[in-house]
Length: 133
Image 1: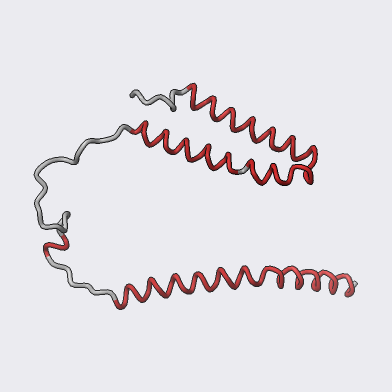
Image 2: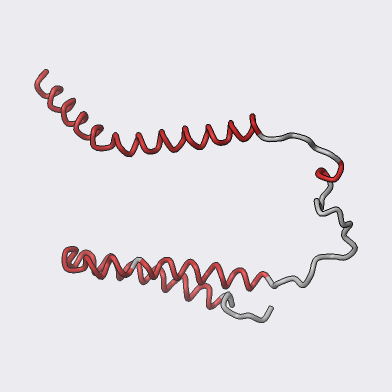
């Protein structure tokens, strides 16, 4: 009975030692981020005055509204482009590993392309790619 627990404990030890560098990296990153934030808070100047607390720090009082506005469609099309572009990048590793994955990899990518196509058709149907408002 004890031998079974010893094997499990030994296996857990090997697994944890494999993940130790990752845990160390995360811990060091968190310590550095916290120390930089703390140093900024403690050492940073705090001399507020009326000009700094004003909405525009330049000292010029705004006399008109903001310049021309862009349609929200512009940003939607840009975000859709980024989404489909990032998803298209996933085809390269798949193509490199296709022989190793075999038929499972082929069906997996076919399902991925199907979901991607459904999303593309939905956006097209809703008029997400049209520039006119």
